[in-house]
View 1 (cartoon, rainbow, N blue to C red):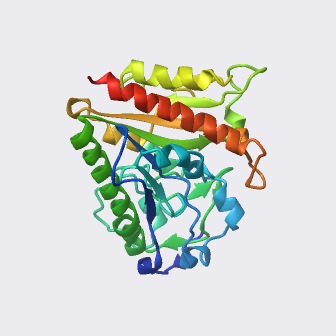
View 2 (tube, rainbow, N blue to C red):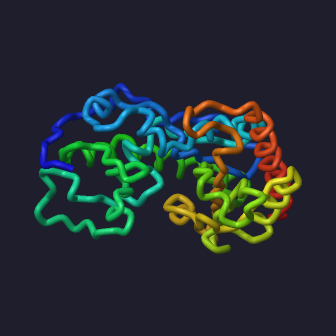
View 3 (cartoon, rainbow, N blue to C red):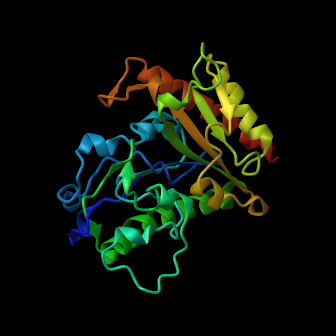
Length: 295
């Protein structure tokens, strides 16, 4: 990255930050979140990056909100991010800021260096796989802070409202944070059968084992290989929203992209609807299980 100044501003008034579905009358004690499936790139951002849109999309959880939509339509609130994670990653903590990305960082910044920042994957990504720089210069600190104010914070404000509403109605809530994972990391267990799903529970800290095991068995009935906490154990949303003392639990669902899409062309596979139905039916079965779980 050069020291060139990329001093642009995004017009946030033109952006619809997220969409929400079926939030008025939830039928199950579940909230669905899809924080990384956004595809709406701000024009000002695209005009100032060093990569193509397809290169930027390599970090995207393509079609994930669409995959779980039928479960939402059956009565589960869904909030889906419209803005891509390469612009700002709402599954990071606000302190995960790489101050070296800005040409005018505050001299007395109290932002602590974090591991994700060091590898370019903080709240504002510096790179996409395989270590390609998103920018060929430095950003304005004001623009970075505006991304947090006008994109990050509204998403989390609404997600928290949906979780709190679920708790008020049912007495508890399971937040399922929905993601996809690259196929290249999904064949580390069995050479003959690739991993289909990873259920991330912060090593059994974010939700009762009965809950995660129920979902695992429901998915396995379709012939899928399911693992717990490998290759992922959970990220910011799973950790931050988990409050067992308030009966709020989280589970991060990771779906092997190769199940439903061509990762090079970003096109759906012929089995897309089948995979979607299997996932949605499993989530709805879990929803019915949860209705009795706390009785």
